[in-house]
Amino acid sequence: MSLNALLQNILRELPDALGVVLTDWEGEAVANAARMDDFELKVFGAHHGIILDSLRQAAARLGEPGVEEVAIHADDRLILVKPVTEEYFVVLALASEGLLPRARHILRAYAAQLHEEVA
Image (cartoon, rainbow, N blue to C red; front, side, top):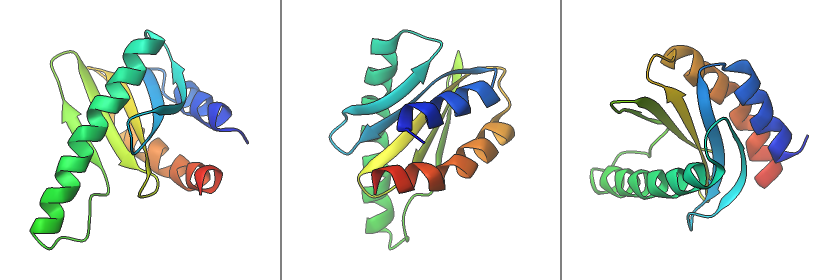
């Protein structure tokens, strides 16, 4: 299944999702599916990649094994960042009233398939 199809499936399974983007380590969007502005979602993915990288560096300094997932609660949305490989990660934006536990479950369920596509 293509990356775009996988991301569309994630969006379809989460009606409160605003968008999902697969981004590489340089901040480039590889694939995305959105109910929000496409450009905004791609920039959103790049910015959250910087946050993920900072958290990875902090974890390494503390001797922690790594970052499995990052959840951010903002005023108007929930953001979930999940590494797929060392070079790729997925960013999911949800409406502020979104169901974070369901989103986490769905993202984890698709992570292996995304990993297969990019590895």
